[in-house]
Image (cartoon, rainbow, N blue to C red; front, side, top):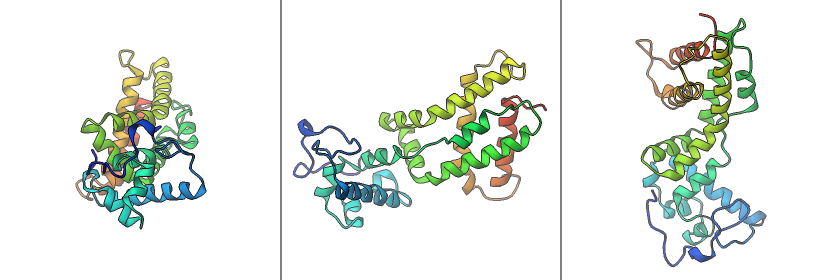
Length: 230
């Protein structure tokens, strides 16, 4: 996925690297406060460039130049541009205590429709705060990069579990067909939410396909799957 191969003169030798762990550089050296600032600068700069360019279109030289540093400094912290994105993803969550509390409510009680609309609004807002790196991650995962696929699955895990539990409660109450697997239902809802978050803000108004209408339709589907009365 890297736009350019590592320079053999500047990249850290494989035998001395420990991977890009927080707090350490690629030489296994503990990073001090200055190093942490440099690492953070490289991450923020890369994310900024990716807001208008594809992953393959951003090179190490581009990042170094935009960060007013050198490729040699870049390679102290990262092997390539995709690894910077993976580091950025470590600090980006697709869930929150607020969202998990929303899912834990009694969806068979009155007010489920409003609760679902609030949930969709909160989820899409959270996703779009990390829009650039989530979009890059998803595209790379769909192209077969297993690093990004794994990062996507890990980020989705907590929300998947919360949705699965909510569907299972609705199924136990007879509100969801017994033949449906709660986890598959949860996965379908999560795909809906991710796609809505990614594409919804760019959807042109008209013919009932504006972002607000899409969110309202998604909220209705989610409420129904979680057991709300028709």
